[in-house]
Image 1 (cartoon, helix red, strand yellow):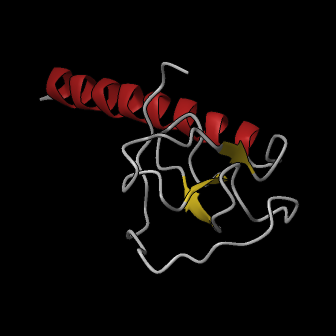
Image 2 (cartoon, helix red, strand yellow):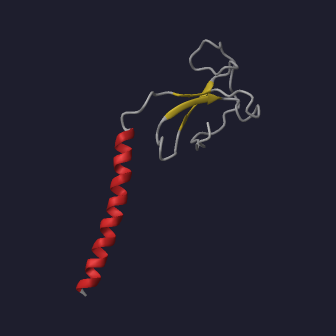
Image 3 (cartoon, rainbow, N blue to C red):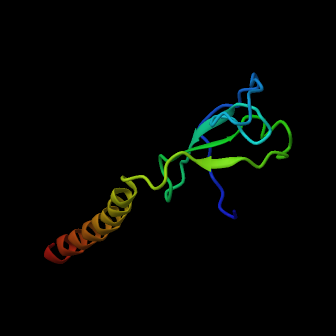
Length: 101
């Protein structure tokens, strides 16, 4: 996966081993960390990674979205489009003001 993600969580080194069959554990058996994506494309989506990911230099590649596709994602896209449109309208208003003066 070529995309980069920002993580809004602190590293918790006090992870405990658990059974690999536990859905909250990574492939190496450690409790998985739940993080939140802060990228514009996946803003607010939760995902799990190995709690030891940074400590073990990435030996465990466990990574999983906790949701399939969040309902609010289309709304986020609409909001981004509206922001762009708002900036364009503000620019147009300023030009009209200059023409009037």
